[in-house]
Image 1 (cartoon, rainbow, N blue to C red):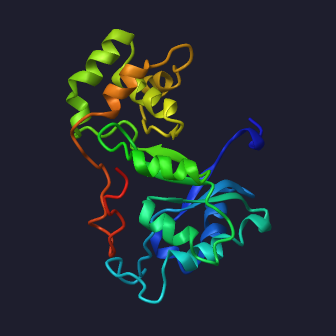
Image 2: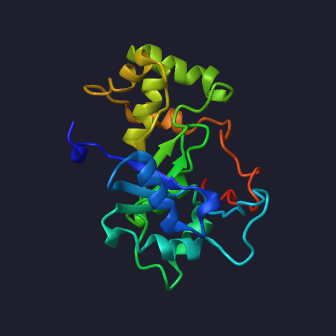
Length: 229
């Protein structure tokens, strides 16, 4: 398969916020590639490599983005974006005078138990594409036993996972499900030729339970502020 037909995304991890140039160089070496299509700031939080429980007091993601903006001109990165940015942090970034490039993508956790409608609408209004990670929830989320999801899947003759992926796609987001099982990977691609009705979309979008597979309690700074609903 020609390289130009493959989309490759990788991320700048938290301990590398002060070393953006070194970070992309390391990633390209590990990937054995000349460039990546998308490079993301993984979290709006740096961590000190010497102590991952500490945040650099003299550094924030604004400075990281200043360095990220230099990369597309190098030819080694086609697009730059962010991940796990809520409205508060996105506003901080976009309103800073040093922000000359609007993030192409915000990769965020999205599923019916964490739909984040305000955040998705905000990003779409800024022409920032949303990519949904943990789009199937997780094995211990309320989605796993949600009766509405189960009924819709049964009526459609689809798996709950396929319904969740379609829900994400019909919201205008891209979805990146994770699986190591060949049959499930194949099933995840079987999304052509059918869709969810407006009523089914509404039912899934209005699930009452809230659940995040990935919170921010392990980070040295808070990054989720409940501003996505």
